[in-house]
Image (cartoon, rainbow over all chains, first blue to last red; front, side, top):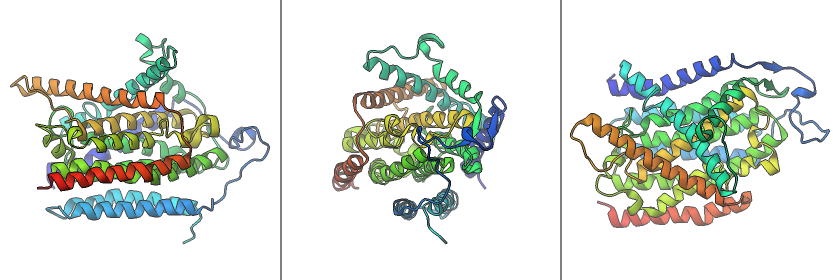
Length: 115
Length: 324
């Protein structure tokens, strides 16, 4: 693997690792609290009804998520036409596409799709 | 990977530099917004209040993090740093000290498109993870707005790539040696700025975080360190998208070459880049300060009926007139 290829994979990875380290280190400055009771209920704007967690049924979210998947793969397809090698399209497919697909999967489940 | 590469990626001209720019953008944003409303804005922390965003960040990190009872804890805690990573990774592809970025390849523009898409989806996930009433409403607005602005944003990004015959940001910058693409593709420049306002949730497209309607939008349930990170990410995205505009339409760091020594010339490139970056940032501040919020249906109609055809018109013209 050339130095350039190493930078393409290592650069983003380095940023994610540094970001997580700083995030965890900064967490030592404050306190964290979780539990039950009024303090830990979602904000209701002064109304008594407290929203409970559940799956949100919405065709809109499903549409938006499918839109995202189609868009991501259309971009990959468009980009791969001019590619001199298969390395970068495959890298983006695995890295970028994979990350988006995981998030999209989560979004679809939250939107009410049952697999 | 060499030690110099690590320093470049993490410190200068990489992540730390852009985080500093993000804080400066936040300060300029607040100052400009205040001046346009005949207020003074931040004043106490640092000269003219320039350190106020830094003070706010550290204040938030020391506050109590309250985890709502029904939240998705994993995403609630580890979502904010992942949300931050998206624009942070994008910054390493931006050329600042020369014609190429710290990391550059033939397809980095595609990677940037992924980053923009990933960033919007992460915001949606963070809102879901909080499981609050206002967050849910805000996420509905966010995804609807996203389907409106994403297509023109992509078309506006592709136009410079077509002009330069390159999907590399460095390649597009190098192709602007003689003429900036803002002159050849002014409509794409305008479309990108408008779409960037929607991506950044700035007025008139601050619909997903409209404070007078839905409290704090999708960030309502966040507090302490996660909120500090989310706010910093929004400012980092602000700096990143401005830097992208500079690279794709304003020739990046390119300008008159005055020195034969590459080190002196790199300093000059940095100054050119900085000036262009803050001009673009200021343009966005002025637009966001001058306009009022629109409704979600108006925003989506505006994007699909006006902005998308405009971006396609510009791309079509470019392909007809400049295709080699």
